[in-house]
Amino acid sequence: MPDPILRTATAADLGAILEFWQLAAEDAHRPADSARALEALLARDPDALLLAVDAATGDLVGTVIAGWDGWRCHVYRLAVHPDRRRAGLGRQLVAAAEDRFRALGGTRADAMVLDENALAHHAWRSGGYARQPEWSRWVKAL
Image 1: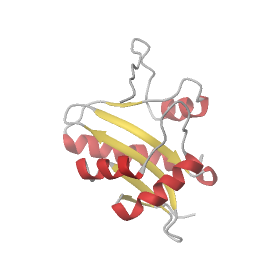
Image 2: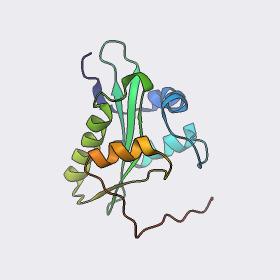
Image 3: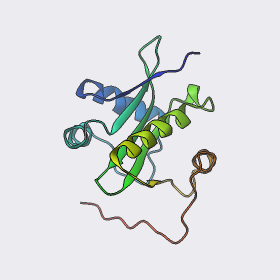
Image 4: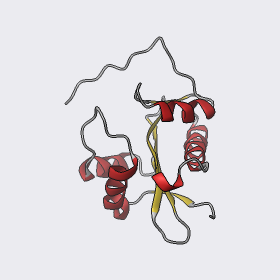
């Protein structure tokens, strides 16, 4: 199977992204994603949402948000189609996010991963990421 095409998302992709995340993304312990939130992301940082698109079919097969706030690099919503997992696509998406961060001047990236998501722990560890035990994430719904 040829490597998918990696590109940034556009407004035309938002419906497909939301549908894809229903299939491929971890959604526990968080509010539902919305078109409005994705529109805000694209308006603020049009290059943050990276997509992997099947070169033959045009189908969405992976996503990652490479969030840069001008100070820190955050990786969100890494998702790979279940039929395409364990073939290096997640690694390609993370590498594209890291390339973006380096180009912007970033020096360290972080990823939020649920404690019980053991499959994700393995993937992040194999990509050179390490759990940072001295931090806890504090959240408040707005």
